[in-house]
Image (tube, rainbow, N blue to C red):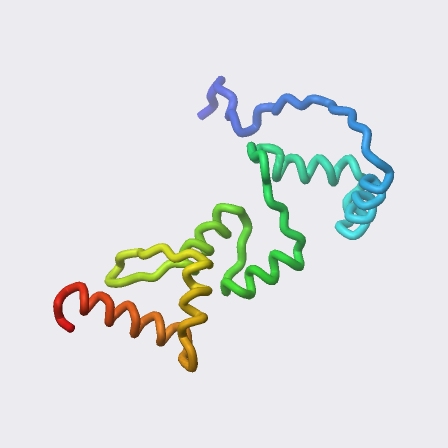
Length: 141
């Protein structure tokens, strides 16, 4: 069965040629990256970077080096491909869950709790403290 309607996923995507000027130090760094990645040219590398990051509409985007990303992945125990995945993992890592109820924590609060967990593992100290305070609140203690 044939059809006259063209499949949109095979339609040509319009492209625009952009010319830019870079400081030589930036060009040299990009050229080195292109060589390490076996990319044909600096222009191709820039195109790849823009295609993967160009749609990010942010006034303060964060970019992690591979070393920094790997360090964060090791700390949080999982790999990340996007900033949204990293943000979600940080939220989970800084949250306490009681019967499926999420209680968001801040790094400042955790640091204060750490300073009060003298001689105890932090996880045991937090569990004991939360349980004691919830029991007090519920009138069990």
